[in-house]
Length: 334
Ligand code: BYC
View 1 (spheres, protein in one colour):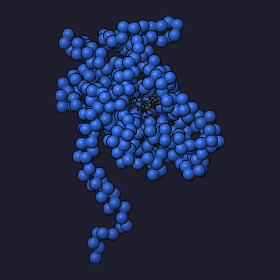
View 2 (cartoon, helix red, strand yellow):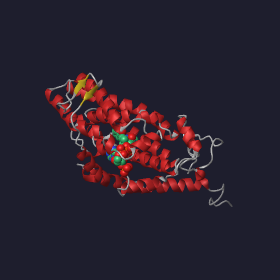
View 3 (cartoon, helix red, strand yellow):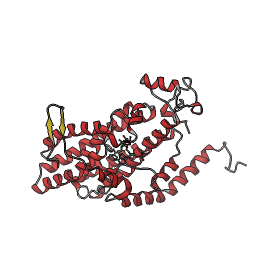
View 4 (cartoon, protein in one colour):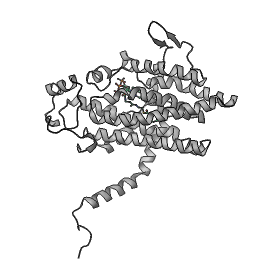
């Protein structure tokens, strides 16, 4: 369970997980020193549980996140666009794999995590419960959703848990390609025919507010933030990252020649940030509770994909068992 090679734990440094205690001074000192916690290190049980919760939700988001864009692979407007989109969706599957592997280094069982997703006991990002109505939505997802994801995930490269932080380095590199491809799709549309520009504007109008909600509830309504920040899992609060994303995105919208659907967006010289209108967090909570436009469809598709893939898992297990058996066993050696 703890034998994942990419985490390369230093086994000599610290006692095993069984000896972990919430007030372990070595753990506290390691965090104070900005050190990395590795899988075999002692860690408080609550720290481990928080990481499994966040990493599993993150992994689930990556694989559910394949659906809205996957919808457009067969309808991409050119072969070039289709090839790029296929590669992007495949990257998201890869991110899911790194993240499930990172959760396994904490003792989580992948089948159990998927079971919790399928039964609704674990969450995935609210953003993937919105439909992709036009090709421009693929651009808006790349530009806004992947842009928000990068803003949230770059600080996670410095997360105190080593395997999660290292997985994020590669994920962020890939996400920045994704964001550029989204920007490029929207740039082409916004400089195309009036109908194409309208399509791009409509996609941005629908995806702007849900993208801001990806960062989670406001800080004073975020039960996990304070402890996660104290443990060095989160480096910035939800509101800080949301503001950073807005500040980065407003000039990009201007470069695209598109507007953001918030009349209250304006630069505040004193704060050194953009002010923005009120975010309707009741929508976020409704979507999280399962009442978004596509929650039922996303989950039904995911469960079906999982059931349809049962034969692959069985074949892989049979293959692994065959190769784990002692040489000659079961091969009918005379
Ligand atoms: N959607 O105390 P809080 C991608 C939940 S994938 C749903 O602030 P925390 C991509 C939260 O889980 C992007 N649920 O929580 C893929 C908590 O519930 P529980 C995914 C949300 O953990 C394919 C409760 O609300 N990125 O980029 O401190 C294609 C209270 O919140 C949401 C990650 O997962 C939400 N938006 O902070 C394209 C990044 N927000 O667990 C792109 C890693 C909050 O207590 N995760 N909740 O029942 C994080 O950074 C943090 O978990 C969050 C939330 C900032 C999301």
